[in-house]
Image (tube, rainbow, N blue to C red; front, top):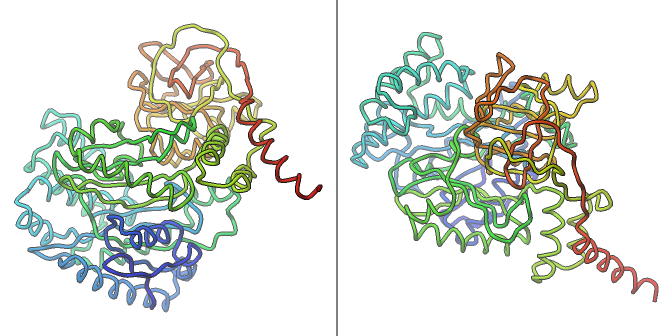
Length: 531
C-alpha cells in the first residue's frame, strides 16, 4: 500500500486527484518550509473500495495506516498511544475539490487510557489531558459510532450544571475527568464501545472518514455545486498539535483578505484554549485577531507573514486553518478562499493592480461570475436594527422566517423568499442554505464551515448574534426580546451584521469602477487579434 508522506524532510508533491486538494496543499506548504505538523495520506483511489466494503481494500488500508504511524513516530519522537510520550493524531478528509465541512474529521485519535496518563506525565497538565480524552470520546462516538450530539450534550450539561458553569472551558481537571468518564459510561450503556487500542481507533476513524463521502449532506453539496464527477475522498492522518493546551494556545481560521467584502486586510478568527473543530463547527463564537496578538504575539505576527507568503505562492486569496500550541504557530490547511461574487470581482482587480496575477488570469478567475448581474445591495428603509451580530457574508436579504431547512424548502417552493434562522451554523443545513435568501444564527463565527458555504452560494449571512434565541422545535424565536414566529418578515444586512424586523425594500447599485477595469482587460485582449 503506497502512502504519501508529508513533512520530516519529505519532498513528495502529490496531485489533488490522488490525495485530495487539502493534502496536496499541505505537502506543498511543508516543502515551502512552513510550520506544518507531519502527516501521511491514504489515497482517493481507496475510497470507493472501502465504501463498498471490499476485504482487500480494508487490508490495504490497514497496511497503509501501519506504515504511516511508523513514519509519524519517527518524525515526532513519540509513540502512538504511549503511556509516557504519546502521539495523538487527527484523521481528516479531503477531496480533489474543497467541500468545507461536508466530510468527517476525528480528532485526538490514540487517546487511550494509557495515553491520557502519558499526556499527564509528559506535560504535567492533568486538565489538558482529560480535555483531550473527553474530546476524543465525543469525536469518535459521534463520527464513528453515530452517537447523536444530543446524547453527549445531556451528559455534558449534567456536569456543567453540577459545577455551576456554562462552558467546558470553565471546568477544572477533576470535572473534565468526570465528564470523560460520563461519556464512556454513555457509550457503554448504548453498547457502543470505543476501543482502547490506538490502532483499532485509527482504523475505525479512517473507515468513517472514507464512509462520510456517501453521507446525505456530502451528496447534497456535490449536487448543488455540480461536483458529481469527483471520485471520493482521501484520508489524511496528521500528528496532533494542541490549541487546548493553555492560555497561550488556541486555534483559528484566517483569510488573507476579506472573502465577504473583498477588502485587502486579513480576516482572522480565533478561540483560545481550543481545538480547531470548536471554530469551524460554528458551535462557538470566536474572537478577533487582537485576542491572538495579546495571548501569543510572536505567533500572531508570524501568521500575518504566512498569509502573505501563501497568497504569493498560490496566487490567490487563501483560507488557512491554524493552531497555536504554547505560543508556537502551526499551519494545518490552506485552500483558495470561498468568496462572494462581489469579493471575487474586488480580488481580481486588486491582484492585477498589485501584479500578483495578469489581466488574463483575472478574467479567468471571473469566468464563473455573472458580471452583468453583479450588483451591491442595501436596505432602503433606515429604521434601527433590532440586533447586531457578526457580518459573515455580504449583501442584504428580506424574507419570511424559517427555523428549519425543511420549512425553508417548503416556503421557497411556494415562491416566498426565506430567511433561515438557526441556533448555530451547521453544514447539515446545506440544502436550507441553498434555497434561503439569507441566514441568521445565534452563535458561530464568520470562518465556520457553514459561513464559508453561505459566501460561496452568495447568501447574506449574519452569525454569532447573542440577542437571537431560537426554539426550532416550537417554530419560534426571540430577537432582543421581540417574539418572532415562523413566516414573519425579517430583513438582514450581511455587510453590517444587522437584523431588522419587518419587510424592507432593497436598493441595488453596480460596482462600476471595478467593472470598467475588467472591461478594459477584455478590450486589451481583443485588440491584438484585430490588428
